[in-house]
Image (cartoon, rainbow, N blue to C red; front, side):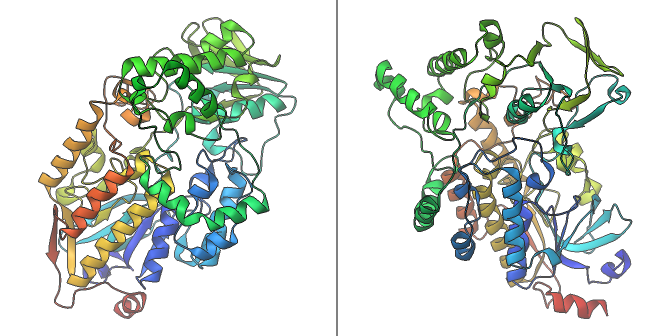
Length: 563
């Protein structure tokens, strides 16, 4: 249907969901169950989001697999067997396809379709979406299922196009696989992705040179297989597991130690840290004392402990010191989990280049040149991260009331209501947006919360025949100030992290331009707040009635309107 026919009162869809990742899959499931005429637009070649795109060696969960999966279907919980405690990318993609096929969701998705622009039509209270294939689709409501880490960034270095060998960002790892055997490989970056891929590349490549600007803290993943017997036990305990996740600040199984840091003897602290370091997952980060996130002295003590464990694992003392962060403490930004990352630097074929000592000058035809000289490579891998949280939004020309551009609004400082809505952009929802509970939690747990809340809001809208839904300016200001204020007690406020909106490769996101992107109150408090808003009749949201008939448009009604 054209924009003209939409202007006559019948948009193409009641709801369009952008993104077919973990969020978009569950959101379309909710819409289909309600009989709503909805579609998913996905720029990738298939569903899966993060797990469709990131196919580099070593890509896997840092959440326990059984806490990452959806909780909404007992059938899925009963039928799916997680094979590893921290499942790998191929299995994760297989799982998402399993869910989509089980509920016949793929027919509601459109692939290889990038949304170039989304403009709000104030006269008719609809969104018009301009697509990469030349079409324009209209809808009453837009739901942004965009990944928080789905817009990769490349380093600001000259000559990237000059290199004659193969080069790619980890996000664009060839889907057919890539043979590294016998190759000389350069990797730029030592963030979370690089920490996963470096040990794998080290095992295959003839030579691997890692170019590091800033080291990151990391802790052992301690992965293991899940037997049939253990999986059977997990199935019995799913309600208990998800209940535990709902009560933890991060949405994981791990709960903080609520004893006072200084009330526990140093001997007891060290004993606990030894135990947590050797346990699977985020325990050393999230089962730790709360003071490590707020108290400089407590954080220094845990940082010194982790540094000592790194020194034990790296043979060369000089290399070990280069791998220990000096500009931030342990845990003040999300901690990458690793499998023999530090041991990789003990291999004869792995070399570490500190580009704070010998700056990277340019990419050349043959490789990478630093102030020390030129390194020749067959392959260059960019492990240089993402334009986190807002990057995927910025790459769509989103215009709301009065033609206001969302990127321009957020360039002045990210502001939302509950991390779900934006004043000036009616009928647009973000189940896992910046400043929401999803941004700093076990992602699928936060996604289910956000999707369910947005769906309940839409049911309220349809029940009352509203055509326009918008957060008030006052409510947005109050929520944003609340989010900002919660950074004041957290050591993360000083970190160069995507938690503070930092990315040196994105203009305006450099150090010194903090952006307040995550809600630091923890999942239980966030859920309590959004539930209070719903119970109040959606305080902070303005509703505008529509035509007398009101209500949502089902698929059948949409078809009738188009005829």
